[in-house]
Length: 181
Image 1 (cartoon, rainbow, N blue to C red):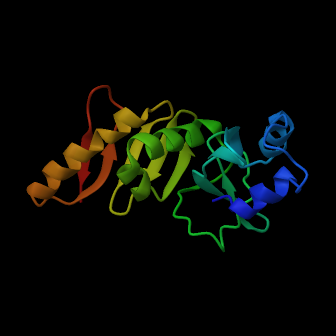
Image 2 (spheres, helix red, strand yellow):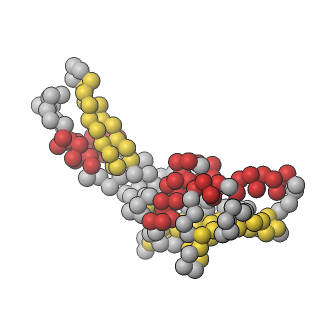
Image 3 (cartoon, rainbow, N blue to C red):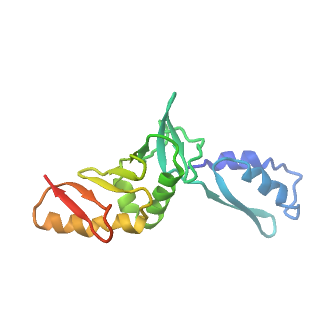
């Protein structure tokens, strides 16, 4: 998501720089960017610096006065214009670190399930309502990605039996309750 040209400009290198110069000031310049989670600079002799950047990945969209804001797993805004970037992210009502951490875990461990999430919102004090294309999922707010992924075999079983499900409920320990249409 971060254009390489932005990183190069941020490095502020000139033709007098040496591959042997201390890379710490360069790393510091990169680390100050909102989208950079971690930056490292190595050397490839005789004259090349190798810049490795790990980004803060977008996990959700939050409504704002100017449209939508892209946020990361810490619920921090990222400098990504959602109208110009190809983003397919869930919508959440407000910046919420509990929800964004869940989304980040889903994105890394269960990318197919993450891609299906269109919206997550809090219901009451301790519950979440997750909207997928064809089904709603009710769960407790402390749900893990592993627990949420337990809906997949249930959905597959229901589809095999040609049963249309309206809602899946994960609020009960070790159970996935299906409410049929």
